[in-house]
Length: 288
Image 1 (cartoon, rainbow, N blue to C red):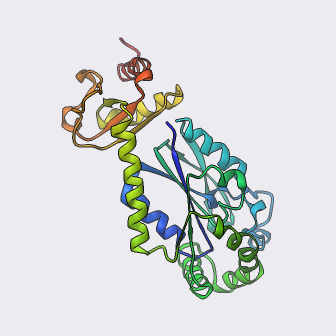
Image 2 (cartoon, rainbow, N blue to C red):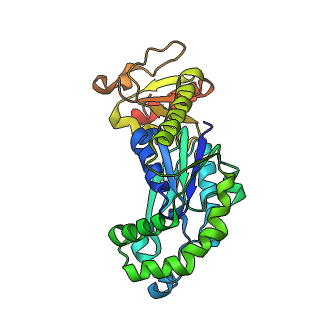
């Protein structure tokens, strides 16, 4: 499965997360979303008070190598165990989030265009901009309400690192974008990007002549895991009809009729026999 990668960048408080989350809400599990913030480097050996003063807006603050590796895994049809950042502790948490490969992958962050290796992976680059006064006001409200920060700390961090780093590293990447929008709530821009993603999804599912495999909701995650473990590219979608020409389905013995028209998994035709064997094996507990 060759995924389409969409990078969404912009300054702090610009609305890039709002724009990203609107797309996520529109497509639910049909797309994958990775946040660059989750790839801040671990700082377990640094005291909390020192972590509060660190520069989190410099490219070196991120473990971008890990993000690059995990994006490559997703493009190969493998799942990725993505880190989770804890803003209240200014450190990466011990939790991980399993991200499954999807036809469309969004990558959001202030500096996702700053690293050329990462930038070159994106098929579409979107930059969300906003006036500086709007961005600082949004950041104060967000950091106090959602991230457990105090106003004094937010203002100090903004003046000492966020603002100067924006003009050094974030703003210069704006001309590198394919699309520049002036708000995360820009409805025209949102509909244009949403429509583009829908077209990408449609081309993949109905024009690539891939095999259609259907199963019950209960077995859905197990099947996806076994295909990913065996490096068989796949994608899935909820569609109302499995009767398309040129596609085959696994036997009805492995379907739940109550959800038959809900969950469908696609594998390439050249992988169908191997996928069929693995799926039937895992669903029957190894019995053929």
